[in-house]
Image (cartoon, rainbow, N blue to C red; front, side, top):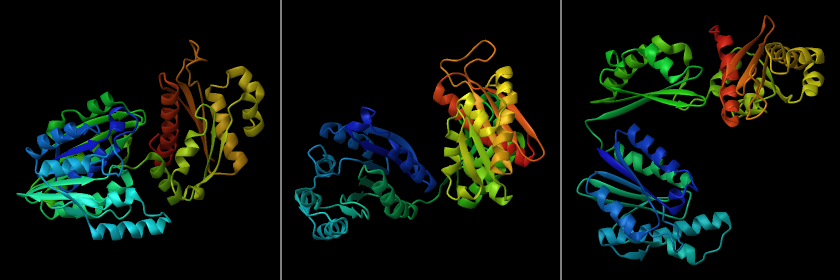
Length: 413
């Protein structure tokens, strides 16, 4: 079963809002065995919307539309659906009741906009919206499905998960689509490609995509097979081969973040950590505390940005900073050991570097970062060159710091 996704809204075309709806819907459709073949984004223009409807309805079995179901003058999607399928609009008592119930819970009075939301194409089916006032629209004809959802992401997600995916899963037969994403860090795309070698020798007809970002490279395997068991076994064989070649760089799968993986390791081993950050400015602690339950292993995070703060908060000798400079192996090690000793944790982690765009020299260029690690048996520091771009340097340094701890705990470094 092939599908197309149409997203509607001027705000998407001018870059005011990032189009996350397409990505979410595509991911859920693929997991349900529905292949996404086309994506279109159009503005709040009736003619443009109708043209997109014609293009996709003629070519695909499933068309999912988001956006333009609100009650304001620029929300014209409902009107476009009626014109496209030759339907009229009528007020529905069931929608009136559900909207009244929702507004009562919110303490909101009934008004013209609520009245507008009771109007619905007279020959379409309702896709319930459990968290909003705009009902979704379903038109099923000749074994094909045309579905229209609100553009508000949290409303759209509820409707996709509760209604659309169960409906499509009940109709999809003869084909299963599987995706598996392996997340790596500390290695470049070209290095991964070199170590994997000729991927056609082990992919068994599947596709492998390299998806680089400042935090690392994702390896996404995609395949289609006749049934779930066959697809899952094939995916397992491919993943095992990839891990045998580049497994030391793989820290997680799917949407797992490195901070989540590291958090599990720390909890399993009953270890605590403290962080002293200079160039990353608290980004490491921010990533760690994004994970629920991180208070069980993170004791504290300090931003020791100035030389004086490194001495006062962490005990880094002023003469050491004067001799080696704040961005050095010695200072990174002293920061990591200092934060560990002063907090009484099992592990101390530190960063000191030059994020730029100013401050670099021939000996210490922009992008140079030293990352320090300290535990009861050792204190070490690793040198990195992360290139230019202040935000990119900070992101890469924070990721590399978390990865250093992971590798130390697993004996990979």
